[in-house]
Length: 453
Image 1 (tube, rainbow, N blue to C red):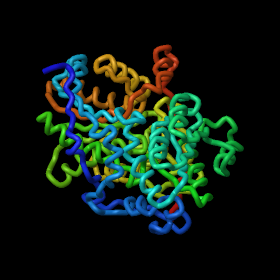
Image 2: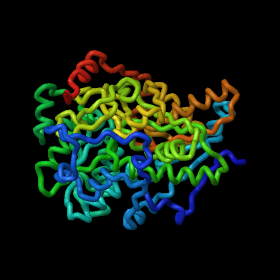
Image 3: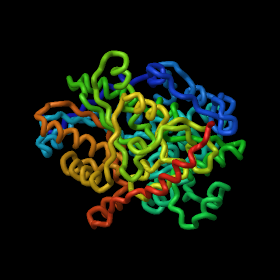
Image 4: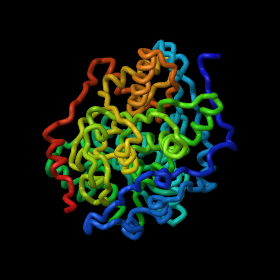
């Protein structure tokens, strides 16, 4: 067998429907609540910021949701995405384990994010929306929505977390190439941004702040809706095309994963790969271990509290039950900007609470070391976010080596690092540090969680 083994699914086999884990959960997901009344949210409550089709998907309990043909047409630009066996990495680690990765970096924007950006732009265009506002951390989501907006004739405005805006100028340039406007957050353009800057003029920003700014713009302009790149149910739904493809490709490889690994920030790429396998564990007696990997500097699943909280710092969003570090928590300015979020997808959080997945946290320097090991073996330079999944997979492979077990490991390589080379430059220069979160600030943020009586 050659060193590079790729499994390409024929285009006609690409999944035609997204999978909704809500249909198979043994315990129903706690409902989102209206922040003013504390009552379960209804479709009308979301109408000011989302199109009706997205609201319907957010609240559906149907197991399968058909993918519209215009969305499939765009998906065909890069999907089905390849599954690759990392034989060179196996050899470098000296492990008896088989390591596979689903490679989402082949999309036009270079990550898994267009899997949801494209349908969200399509549904908004179908309802006559001319303008979308959104937030982005490292820029993967912002560039993906910019790409999708360019295809469907929608103007896109992106509030980018300021630390990432400064660290990643080429992500900014990519958004602008696709026609989007990119704004450093917190900004002076919104009440939410001005309030933060008044307290801290040098604020690095956070995804929670950027969400507040984007939601405020959508809620105050009749021509604008909001688009979200992670966390909510409809986003997790759209991403499941990853896992559905991977299942078919693993069959082509005559293999089945003993362990599935993905990085978690808001939870969407983890959901995309893992939810179909969690379904098999629930419904068909599968025994696949599911491992979520997060940054030690923003340890939502491993250190957060499972509680109702706001998704944004300005408290403009509904209350959702999730693992949270508190909506006012400010994570350190790590290079894995897409993982620097105080909360976790409600469905991913629920899955963790039910014991259907495990969670691990790693520091950024050990994740970059894993990324470099991977790049030197497999040739692909990973995004800093994806390096967490690689670290998790390598840890599992080394465990197999120590235990003499030939297990099969599958992880999601959710993006390339071509626009993140400054982070690698900093790492090689010894300037990339493991930034601990502020324990006192975390305690304060958790003490301010909403009191629902």
